[in-house]
Amino acid sequence: MALEENPARSGGGSRPDSPVVAGGPAAPGPEDHAGGPGGPPPGGARPVRPVRPEGAPGMGSIFVLAFLVILVPGLVAYSLLRWCGLAIGPAGLLGLLVIIVGLGFFPSVLQRLGWVRRRRGRPARNRRA
Image (cartoon, rainbow, N blue to C red):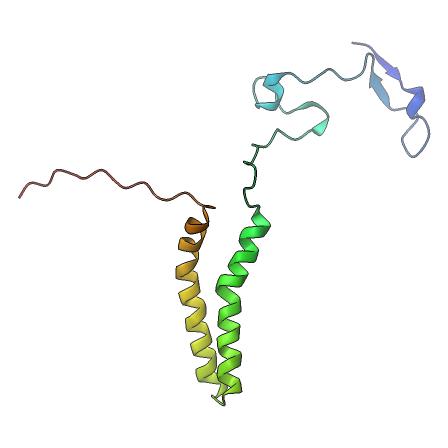
């Protein structure tokens, strides 16, 4: 392939002496996106990401749910206890306890919503008595 100067790109911030491959860039083949022998995709293109199923939650939705299930109940518990007149130390510890309970409860919330697959049960082993 011969290199030639690109007259169309000579203005607008690009260097006028930048070489361009004659014939333009080649169409990427299937091996280019799979990371095969062709190396990385041409032109700095990213590999194709797997397609999420329709209606599946994104990463932002999971973080919002974590905020609502873990942090908000702990802050509400702390605020209510302080409003009722409990000192800052015990109210903070009880609020932290509510947050820890929310952390333990969060994976089951994800499973019940169908956002995470349930674990498959292990096959029973033959136990010899």
